[in-house]
Length: 330
Image 1 (cartoon, helix red, strand yellow):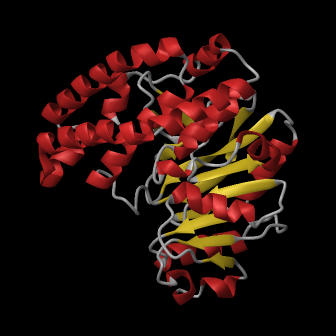
Image 2 (cartoon, rainbow, N blue to C red):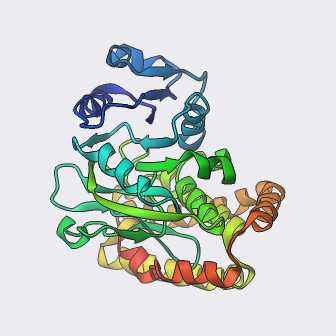
């Protein structure tokens, strides 16, 4: 069990308390304290029996999970946000599900919005410009009560098979924040691994507590990193069509600002304005230029190791698709 934390505090304590109530008892907890200030220890997290890693600086989410992975020898690795509360059967449900499916490399939890009757995610969906969104976001959990295959898992509460990670590699640490779970999931798909949605694995999530629900920081990393995702993972034909999907998403974001709905509208309502959002998008595109060599090397590596071809990969994505208009509405 790996829990990255930046702010620690009471939410981390609540998360650890929920793990003490798990019906499955055979697991270890590694907290990766990205604060650089020993905040996890100051909250008393070490008294829970968890091991605490304390890097000198904020590594970001993916690198923090990687650090925890490297000190673990468990056959399955759970990644869990520090602002989640796991129901008692959460871990047992995940381990039982993945144990019955040797072709499954990852499992997605039923992630609910804390203090709300609605879902945060039941797995993830993908759009034609690489934007990933939570499946079932803001919908009723009852609509997602069936165990089934999904595209990939949200890293806020996921279980990964060590054998899969040994094969495809860990989280890409250049992402820093956001979309690293999408990249990992798509790389797993290229390698032929499946992802299972486990509705009995329930966690409550205080959504986007670290970077803010509609903050400039989140907007920048989401926009930059979805470009990382497509440059690494999308087949050539999809890559060429991605700008058209992006243009459509921008159009629907503009429409959502006008109607006062969706993430772009929330950003605008926080007095940051549409021009600020446009500037973030421009910055994100220019930032990709400095990473092109790395992205090209990774793209070639993924293709060389692929167990499925581009046609099958496109079919997988088509089964878990979200339109630009639907993206802008969330």
